[in-house]
Image 1 (cartoon, helix red, strand yellow):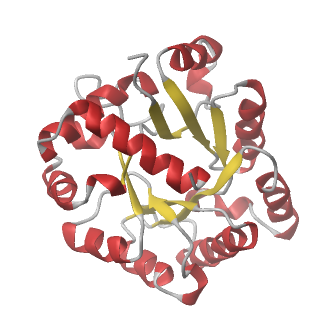
Image 2 (cartoon, helix red, strand yellow; image 1 turned 90 degrees about the horizontal axis):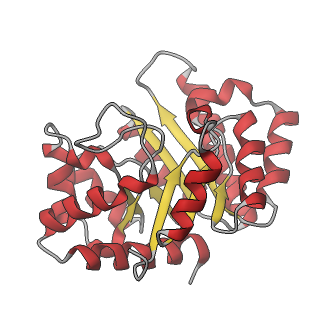
Length: 259
């Protein structure tokens, strides 16, 4: 593995699930060729804990934003704090932001308002976005096609929608975060989308500690399982495993570092 560079594009290593072995695990990732780990904030507490990880580990970078399920925490004062942290060194994106209609709360209008506000923050700071969208395809696409989101680059995290929606996102220039779900036995719709999405538009992610791939489904996830995801994508697209790792590394560097 050490001759291969891996880019973990979405993890939550500030989560309490890693309290017992966080330092050991993050150091192991660096030793094993994980050149970049994007730690993604989701609520106000993780805005600070995510940034702290970037200061402790050279290979850890941050996306700073508030998950749609947590937007009730936001007001003008708390959003100002998000803005100030988002301006700091090693913060490469705004996220994860978006819409989540799986539950009735928070109110959909509130979610849409803060999604748009955080998109405007991304434009203000000239940073890409990491988007969470669950059971909210129609409203997500309306916002992404609006002037608010025009020309803001980004990735659709944990892509779960249809081939048809992936085509619309491709027209908008988006990347697609593909994680452990692609290995699940009930992932037919996602597999169909991955078959069609060009490899140069795919990012590898785990969403650690969530969504561990088969055969670890139900366990705590970590970036150490990225090879299982890459192997599945390689099989779906009938390309070499190392090509998947190499191309997704280049894709993530281009999105998050413009390199």
